Image 1 (spheres, rainbow, N blue to C red):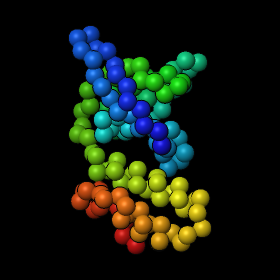
Image 2 (tube, one colour):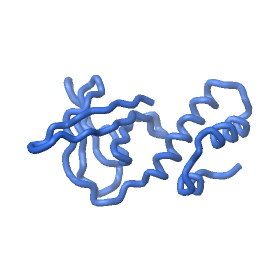
Image 3 (cartoon, rainbow, N blue to C red):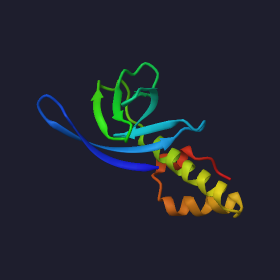
Image 4 (cartoon, rainbow, N blue to C red):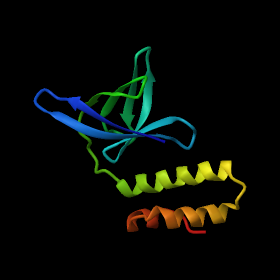
Length: 129
């Protein structure tokens, strides 16, 4: 997972965004920007186009192929779900460790849960062993 902080110039002001690059369950690239999740919609020779993963939301992001933020457009028609994203990032970290290490899965799960210091909402989302 990669973290990038970028600024985008609007017509009247400059906005600062923190962007995390992640991977979906199927191995596709994802962006997490301001607690919203985006999936890659299209790639051209110079840009990547990202759409909000929420059905019916019209917000999109453009990045360069080197992961630099170019443009953020639109307003979300749904609230952000930071607990869901926190749980997803933790699951991704667990998957990486499970694939790389020979430690039993339940031990990795327990270690990561203790290290994560999750919010109550994110804890409720994660399955228990």
